[in-house]
Image (cartoon, rainbow over all chains, first blue to last red; front, side, top):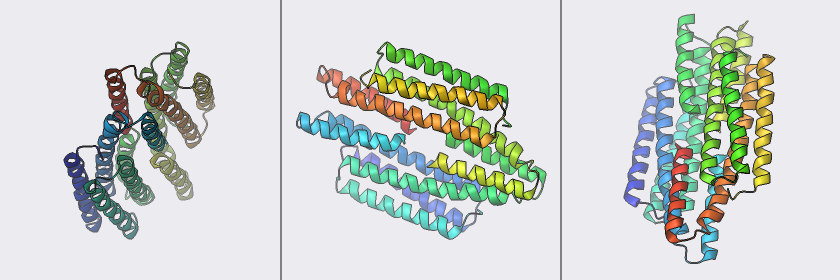
Length: 87
Length: 87
Length: 87
Length: 87
């Protein structure tokens, strides 16, 4: 993975901590909308993680491909991922 | 929270476990696209959690509101959440 | 439909005008990213239309349901729509 | 734009026709959820248009860049678009 490992790990650990917090909110039977708000905040964090990873894939794997065939494969994989994002 | 606590907790714990797995993939410097795929799988899980929570909010908090004023407040809160989802 | 008809029609006509503009950009063989930006702007408009419609559905159809059975049906239909949005 | 013009134009014209249909539904004061369903169908079409355009940008503009500097610019523009999609 070509993205900044420290940054990605920090975002993932923050997301994991938020899930612990949400589990606690469910246990405490907190209000639905408050829990939903936290779930969406964690989703937003994961989107940032995905942005870091996919941007680095383009910057490194696609840009510095070993060959044209390698570049094509890296682009094909990215286009497939983009399809799932845009679905 | 009016949603099925056990179901929501199970989904959240699965998502948490996936984040542990993704952190391990980053540590092992796995391929970008494979990690991105796992991040999006976790996002999909969180969307399911949100669906459970918001559906139960409508079924219980809105449907069985204590008064018309209470119902209006519950609807207003939901509409605000819907705005953030559709943004 | 309980949403403000004039507002929804205005937003839809703006979106339709944007599609005409995008068709022209394609004809003029304009740059991919510029066209993509316009397509996403039109998507954002349609999300605002959907927000108006669904908020009014809650405010009127759910809140002023003729009976509890009617309210349940209106809520079921909304929950189904929410599921498609969150997918 | 490097995407298949005919395909993109066909998708855009279908979306435009759907907007005409939705405007008619509003005029006829059709049911909220039915109109919302059509709006989301048109959104899905626009996502397909965006997928065609962005995939072709990668396949052509990025892959067949005139120089490394040109490739970097094309990648930067794509990463910016990806950020808006993932927001």
